[in-house]
Image (cartoon, rainbow, N blue to C red; front, side, top):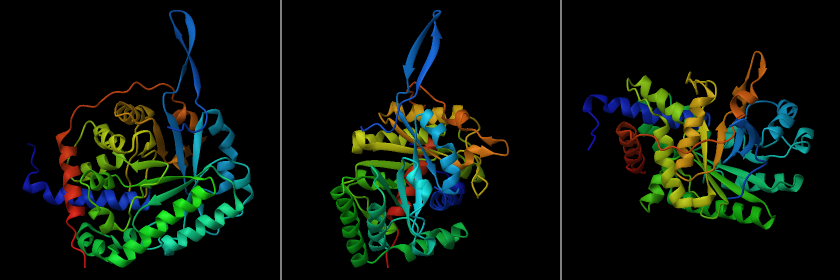
Length: 359
């Protein structure tokens, strides 16, 4: 059994803090068209198809910027997961693109959905569906934005986490309202994709709700698709900052993917990243080959739906590099070698999130 040396215990605490903070401040019905590719083999051209679906998260740019590249995304067979914030609509660009509506509140109201703001989210969903006819909406389950802004160092974590842990009555009331949101969307013939941090999976595996209660983010059972934020590059950066080197970060993807697929089957999806650099200085994939390794690991676990974080960083001083990152066809499924360090980190994080003392 691999054990965590005492001398790097604080380093692992830093990794836990770093992962949650970075994800918070970010980050089978086939989506869109599959891209067809042609390759040469034995002097003859044969056609192969992408053996998975691919989507991109789009959050920080103006809608007009996404509209300009929408045709290119369509040609690549890429679906757009578009941030639509409270107060942003109606907007003319939203009429000209097909997208999954990633609905978000203002930062002061929590930004992402949780039990604290479920009633406001119900109103947001209702207002949006009055204005637009879409096939999918996305609910992003994360602790309130306030949580991330209060975390300034790892030593703040125990105090801050207790501040966002809701009382039982707020949790149950918010959970009920979240189910009502999904039922309302279904009544409008709209599907709901639910997105969450991966540690919720461990809650479900333990037949528990402790982590969901502690963070105020109950994951509903009536979603049409479930995507979990398994960002291997952020894990790798966090570990390197703690003095720990890993050679196969894609094992983190596979380790969760196997459990996600076991629970959710064909409703499973993975959010992968990071492309580019985030505000914390995390370096993303060095090349598309590293992204392909993550996709390969997910495929080997049975998952076929992948969402890349983030479209915005596929643009640099020379323009958009969409083809560089998204022109991917067939990927061979491959299970990465076991990484005991990653297994231990996962267990450590889950144990910490489970053991939080509620007020």
